Image 1 (cartoon, rainbow, N blue to C red):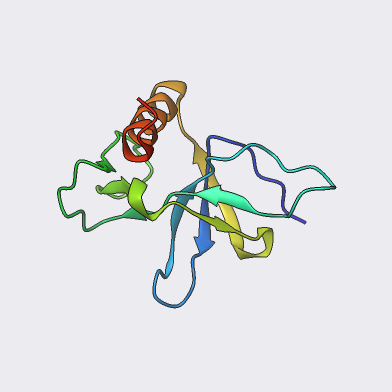
Image 2: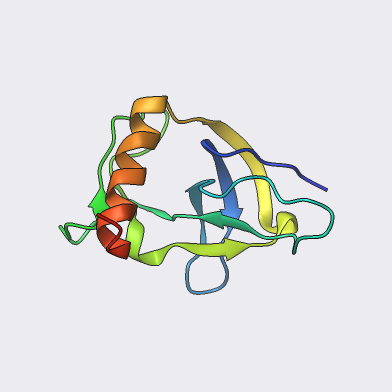
Length: 105
């Protein structure tokens, strides 16, 4: 089973409507007693300009944004291959955006 880590970006099968796309891992690693789900945020190459879309300078991704409003869990078999890691600064930007979206700040 694929084990992903928080901050990694994977190419993943997000389902029929959401397509195969890059997703950063947002959740912490699950334990044996937990459900085998990994929370991700899809990257879109066609942003709408929402305040909950985070554009980050990631050189190995197409220009676009991470759609925080579309955060969802994926099972490990949906992960195809690892693309890279987000920098700590980029992860902090995503975390701040998630806090705004979820009303935690």
